[in-house]
Length: 610
Image 1: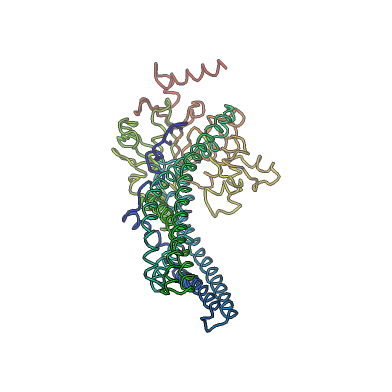
Image 2: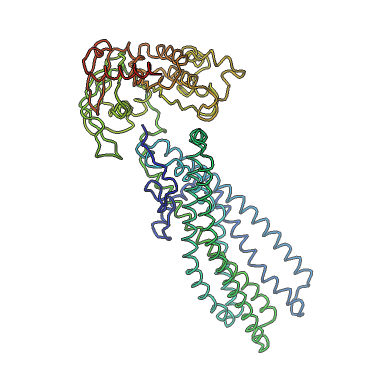
C-alpha cells in the first residue's frame, strides 16, 4: 500500500528529506516575515493577556532604564551636589529593583501563558491537518520530518512568543531610549561612543553569516540523526533479528559526530564574535572613560553625569550584543513558520469540523474500465482497464502474483488515491460523489499486518466505533472468537497490548482486528491476506472469526493461501493489471495451463516439499 522507501543509509543530504527542505537556509525576507506574522494570529484569542503582558514589559523596561540615572544620583550625593540623602537614594534604588522584579515576573508569566496556549493551538491544528491529508502527501514525507514540524518547529515559535519578542522590544527600547538619554547627558561623548558601532555592525554581519549557515547545517544533520532513531525503533525487531545493533549505533554516532563538528565550528565563530565584541565594547568604554574624564577636567561634564553615561553605555552595549542572538532566533522562527505554514496551507481530504451525515449502502460495487498509475510512478500503469461487478452481499476473491494490482484495487475503492481513468461505483453511484467519511464508514479492512495502538484491548476494539457500549464491544469480541484469550488475561479487556500490539500473538492481534471490524458493522469488507502469516491453529480460529464477519456483507478477499477462498462466489485472477481469469474455484482449477491452476499447483508443491 505505502510507497517503498529506501533508507539511504549513510547517504549525504542536501538539507532535504524526500526532496522537501527540512530546515530553511534562507535569510530573513519580507515574505518570510509576513508568514511569521500569520502565525501570530494564534495569539488573537488571548490578546487581552498579551496586551497586559506587554504593559508589564514596558514597565519592566522603564524601571531598568531608571537604574543608571539613580546610580548617577548616588555620585551626586557623594559630591554633595544633591538635595537628597544617601539613604533616600538607596531606598529609591531598592524600590526600583522591587518594581522591576515584580514587573518582570508578570511579564514572563503572562507572555508564557499566551505562548503556551497559542502553541498548543498550533500543534493541534498542525496535527489535525497532517492526519486529514491524503495518502499521497503522507507518502512523500517521512514520519520523522512531520514529527519535527510539530515538535522542533513549533518550539521555535514558542520561544519567539514567550522570550524573543519581549527581549527584542526590551533591547531595542534600551538601545533607542538609552542613546537618547546619552545625547541629553553629553552629545560630544555620545558621538565619540557611537564611533565604535560600525565596527560591531560589520562584525555582526560577517560572523552572523557563517554562524547562521553552520547552525542550519547542524539542524539538518540533527534532523537526519532523529530520523535514524525513529526508523530504527520502528523496525527494532528487524534490527535485533539481524543483530545489527552495532550498525545502528554506528550510524547514529556518525550523524551525531557531524552535528558536533558543525556545532563546534559554529561555536568557534560565536566565540570569536563574542571576543571581538568584548574587545570593541571594553575598548569603547575605556575610550568613553578617557574622553569623559577629559571633559570633566575641562568642566564640560560633571562626575555624576560621567558615571551615569558609563552605566548607560554598558546597558546599550549589552543590548547590541543581544540583538545578534535576537536576529538569529528570528531567522529560525521565520524558517519554522514557513515549514509549519507549508502544511497548514495544504488541502485536507476531509473536514473534521463538519458532522458527516450517515449514509447506508447496500454494497454493490462496480469497476468500469479502471486504469491507474501511482502519482510517484506515473510511467508505470498498475491497473490496465479493470472491469467487474460485485453484487451486494457477494463474496469475491482477488488472487495473483505480487504486484499484479490487487491491493491497488481496494485502495482505489477506499479513495486513498483519486482515479484517473474509468469509474468505481457503489450502488450505482460514483465513489467520488460520496463524502470520504461517509464512504469509509461503510468499509472495513482487516489487513495482513494488524496495527494495534499501544492502549488496552478494549480501546483497540472500540476504535471500530468510538463511544460503543461495553456490551457491544464484548459481543464483537465473542463473534471474533477473541473472548477465550481475552478472558485468560488477569486484566481481561483492560490488558495493555503494548506498542503496535507487541504483547499479543499474531492470531490474537488478528482477532482483535476482526472484533474491531465487527463492531464497525460495515456493508463492505476487505480482507487483505488476513490469514497468510498465521500458523495452522491460529488460522483455524481466525478463519472461524472471518466467517462470522463476512456474514451478509459484500466481501473482497485478497489472498495468497488459495485454500481459504474456495467458498467465495467468484474468484478474479489478476495478472499485470488485468483480469486474466474469473469464475469459481472448481471452474478455474480445470483450465489447462491457467494462471489459477498454476498457482494452486505451486502452493501444493510448496506444502508437500516442507
